[in-house]
Image 1 (cartoon, rainbow, N blue to C red):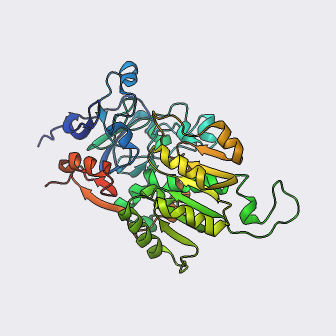
Image 2 (cartoon, rainbow, N blue to C red):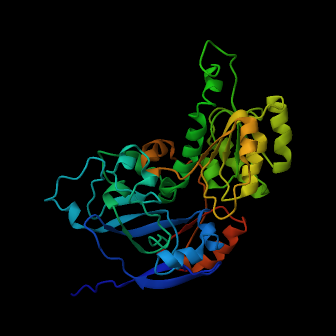
Length: 404
């Protein structure tokens, strides 16, 4: 019997200038470099940052200059199985750096949204998202993962091998669904990253430690107050155990945050410690909780919305910290140097180094309360993008093999 070689894959494609999503047949990806892997995708996610491209905010004309075209396969979150590897993974090649994943065909993998080599100085420092060779899935520079198959460059430095018993507790993996494991690709580590940036900032550390700044003697003990602006999936994952005010203008997202937070909390958290509020309510709560001082830190996790940055500035206290992990595209920064000076406010912006945060995120992963709203086939792609863009639905996952 002759096995016919597959030559086509189905994918969700974006066509400029905006709001044009199509489901098409594309050529099967091929190995082009010795460190490539071909992965059969089980599930892929629809992330809020993909809306920048969908809405036409990603400087399409500039993309056309640097790349062959601005159209490309969408998506940057996936879980799947390795079906083919480049020659770097040969049993005869044993000199791969220790940071590399050990991979073989058949391994189950989850992938961060940017690639990373794992060996450059930036990667060795843990800042894998800014690897000197990094490319972002779902951009003109690298095809996206809302497809049946994907080529992963720098695969050994990028992919997480979920089948390696020396690296991950396989017993726990069996207790977690693939749709929850998919959260490791972006939103769970990104939420953690937003919290870590705030908690580790030199202006925030003295508050929970009851130490003055700069360090000398002891200060009165104080519980930090944090505001989280934006209650999409990343906002859920950024929730930390201090005084928290979770903010979103959309009532359905606020309701979901309440239900998930209290479902997974084992501390019987009171309303004096955690509240979910609208934009109109939050300013009064900050005034009451902090005697009009402001929040110790504000975590901004809204997709490129400048009004969220403005609100964050209004809520943060003098010598406070603002942590933003969302992509802010073409719109000018809404604050001036004078405003930042007036409050001694510090900003942390940027992309999450997902690969470095994977072990920490894995420890927090559970199926107790799923953040996934719907799992659909590619036939629903156009509808789901439009619905997600309007904020009418939460986390969407595509199953590229699901038939209607």
